[in-house]
Length: 169
Ligand code: GDP
Image (cartoon, rainbow, N blue to C red):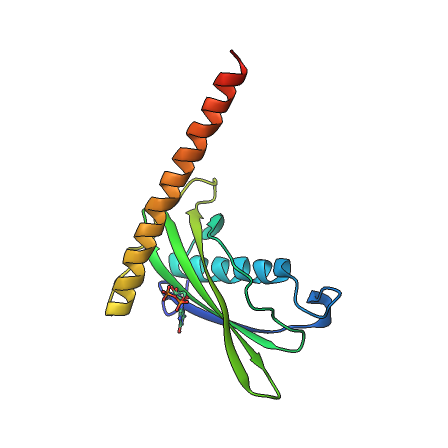
């Protein structure tokens, strides 16, 4: 593997929004953006870890601002936090209307990716060095999101169990 590329924690990808990504009103499908977010997170986490990676979770994605066909969309991705085999990838999405030269931050989202080995078992990922205060802040916020996600999972599990124990009485 090329050492200059493995271990890099940032990646950016720019994509032109083409008509095949549009819904009937000429705006880009949310699903098309989700697919790109997943691809970008895959590439960022896989390059950082040097492993194949799978998607574990996608945090709430809000499509508050529509993206239009013909816009140039840039996905700015960065590894915010790593566990033993998991990585949180944060992605900031920026849309540029090419002729008007207007740039908008349309949304941001956070995906958790897990490195796996050839047998599909979780693989260890390199520790993330936090060199700037911004990296430290993002890492702290990612750790908090991880804790909240685990709590929500546990709550959902308990609700599910309670529901079925009531039904089987
Ligand atoms: P933040 O998480 O509070 O910093 O919220 P932002 O909306 O600014 O960014 C969302 C995520 O996108 C960040 O957590 C980073 O992972 C990533 N990101 C933001 N800005 C950049 C950037 O300039 N370059 C790269 N590579 N990633 C960025």
